[in-house]
Amino acid sequence: MTIGKSRDRENAPSSAETSDEAVQAADAPSIGRVLSTARIEAGLTVDQVSTATRVRVPIVHAVEEDDFDRCGGDFYARGHIRAIARAVGVDGEALITRYDAAHGGSPASKRPTQLIDSGPIKVPGRGRPNWAAAMVAAIVAVVALIGFNLVSGKGDHTGTGSASAPLPSGSGTGSVAPAPSPDVQPPAPAPSAAAIAAVPADKVTVKLVAEGTSWVSAVDGSGKSLFQNNISGGQDQTFTDPKQIKLVLGNGGAVHAYVNGKDLGLLGKDGQVVHVTYTPGDPQAG
Image: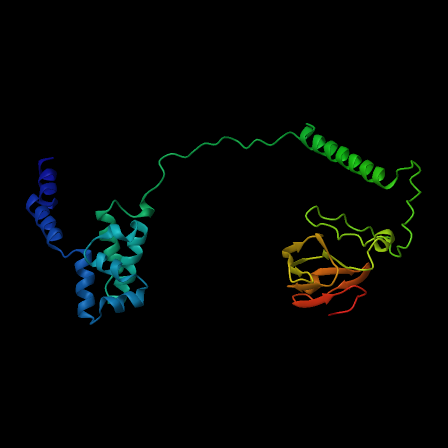
């Protein structure tokens, strides 16, 4: 027993040898120093290494300064070290081993200490009816029935389901004109026969009805201004004078004219400036 213990003491490393190895490891150049020295010896610049490895220049500088926090995590740090080592011609795996030793080991050495027991997978019994699916099918059927009844009710107001409303007279296609928008005013109706008969024969009477928007100026026979303003949206103005009515329209295509009870239609084209003068016994352009 004494001889065996003596041999074990002889084979075991002395504390001096262990301290020497620790001193040598501490004195070894860092990972960043190894990469930086190898790059310089290879005659490469940081920009060239960045181009070859696709590692951004600031990250290359950070790795050479052993600042691995800027890599964004151990996974990226290992990848950057491996890529830069390959570009400058050094053993990247040896540097990765040193990195893992200094930063808590490689990912492969880490194993989960406890598995999560989620229990057996529960499969619903085949013999149990699926009430949710049955309810959905019933709701769909009810909605379809209601929709059918609504459509049938709209198409059959007489209760027979076969009669259809007659088409309006004069309509060849049976299309229904859309309801007018509340913002659009309908054009003013044309003067009636009684209104035309009531126009005095010894005067000139001009009625303007706006079908769009136009600026209107009206001057009587003595040169007096009767009206100067815009009319639009079915608005109308009527002017009477014993001698003449002189008009200037900013948009002749937007104004319908009735002179001495006669319909002259639009006084011009869209955007056309019109100058006209009417006297008793017209219509004719002055």
